[in-house]
Image (cartoon, rainbow, N blue to C red):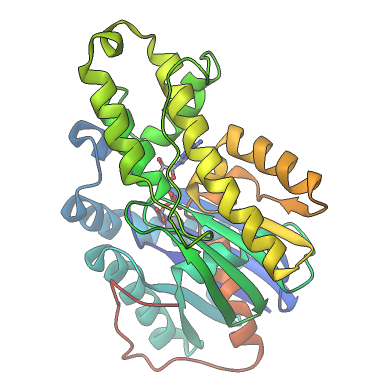
Length: 334
Ligand code: KG4
Ligand code: ZN
């Protein structure tokens, strides 16, 4: 079955054509993303109104480009999978309305997908992974540990009590005047820095070994920046020290959850999974404990439509479809 995936939950408009024969076994025939970093950079963060207005302009060309480069016409598709939440409601509506229009015009079945389910299943795009596996989802909006037990069966084992890890990266980058988006800039700058140069406290949630907290580390960096030594410390050293603290705070609960779940594989996913230090350190820590550690290619870590097509594929393969009056849900729960 050929599936068209559509994603527009935040600031990326994306479309994908995926070929699949059974749940989890997929070949990506085309994967297109229109990124809006240049538009939001001037504001130091995502402006929701600008994100949705730009999606209106780019979504159809992005879909056409995906179909063209896969060499597939709408008539050859077996179904459409589209993100219906969580995310920015204006952004979500653009992709969802577009999917509904295409489904109505073509008669194709359409399914609405939870964006987080997309991230959880993204590691399957390029890897065979036995279930259950443990997924650490780290993005701009989410930081959580899930047991992926089967397609459609997910159990939350832990999550952040305050900020998401990506949010901490973005806010610290903004404080340091490093620009936007912050995660990638800190990742690159840190390669030239000493992670031991600045003492950044590691926060752990008492009595909840699988939960995370990132607001304290952000405040610690703000306090340090305002201090005398903050003004004389090389930005690369501060970036590396901050990043190392975040990585430590992500790894400890992940290993605790993996031990508890007893699964063989830890899958790292979401935008922050693109972080080189996190990938290296988690691979090392996981393998020391006897786990296989899998992280998708960078293009499947950050928001993309391939993960949405994959997350919709098992329902489409079963012959399911959603009614065309489903709504976008900004706070959709998994
Ligand atoms: O999954 P994603 O594209 O969008 C959300 O669903 O949130 O994740 C975006 C987040 C941003 O906070 C961005 O700063 C972070 O992922 N990010 C990174 C890196 N690349 C993107 N954080 C750390 N290191 C990176 N290399
Ligand atoms: Zn995401």
